[in-house]
Image (cartoon, rainbow, N blue to C red; front, side, top):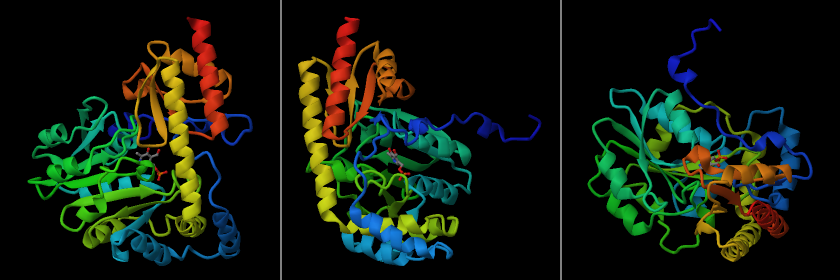
Length: 358
Ligand SMILES: Cc1ncc(COP(=O)(O)O)c(C=O)c1O
C-alpha cells in the first residue's frame, strides 16, 4: 500500500478480541470478563421508551452525571462519560500529550488497550513487571522519571484479579511529582470483596488522580458502551474538551441510569460471582491445579505447558476461555465467572480434557 500511514501506527497490534463468534447460540463465553446475565429489566424498558427519540442527538448526560455523583458522593462536574471506559483512556492521552515529556507507565501484564492507545497517540510505554502476580506500587514509583506523563494502574488487575490495597495506594501518592496523572482503572471494582480495596474517590480532589469505572461488567452493558471517569472538576473539564460531542449514545445513557438505580440486580450479580469463585476454587483444588485468588469476575488458572492446547480443545467444545500467552503468562488461562451451569460445564470439560492427555 502506498498511503503514508504513520510508522508508529503500523506497529500497533490489533486488540485481542474474543467476540468473533458474535451472538451465535451454543457458545459458553468465558474469555472477555463479561457479565453472563442480561442487564436489569429496567434497562430494557427505559431503552424501549427512549428509542422513540433516536431522531435527536443524545440528551440526558446531565441526569446521569447527577446520578453517578450522588452515588459516590462527588459533584456532578467531577464526572465524565465515554463510549466505554476505553474512550476515556484515549481522552487522557489526547489531553496530556502536548509537551516534550511523553512516557506512559503500565504494569506488565495489564489491560492491553493502555499500550495500544499510548502507541496511537505517540507515547513510549514503560512496562513494570508484577511481583507475585500483583502490581507493586513501589516498583511503579521507582520507574518514574522526567519523561513520565501518565501512569495507568488497574485495580483489580486484568488479567490476574489481584489488588493493591488502600494503605499501599495512599503511600504511593505521597511525594509523587505533581504533574503526573495517575489513572486508576477500576473496571472490576464492584466485584472486589477485600475490605482493603482502596476508596480512590476520596483522593481525586487533592491528587492528580482520575478514577475510571465502567457499566460494561457488573452492570452488564458491555454492548451498549459506556464508562465514566471521576476526577477533580478542572481535569474533567479539560478531558471533556477533547471528547467527540455525543460519543455516548442515547441507549447507553438511559440504560446506564436505569442500571445504576437497580441495586437488587447488582446484588444478584455479585452473589453469583461470589458463588462462582467458590465453585472454581473448589474444583481447581480437586484437580490440584494452581490459581490466583481473585477480586474480580475472572480467575487465572495455572494449567502448565499444555495451556494453549487445552484452550483449543475447549474451543472445539464451544467453550471460550483466554490463553494468557499474549500476557506473557503462557502456563495460564483466564476464565470468566459465568452462570453456575456454565462454570460446571467449563470445569467438567477441563477435567475430561486434562485426563485424556495425562
Ligand atoms: C481493565 C479494563 N479496563 C477497561 C476495559 C474496557 O471497558 P469498557 O467496556 O468500559 O470500554 C476493560 C475491558 O475488558 C478492562 O478489562
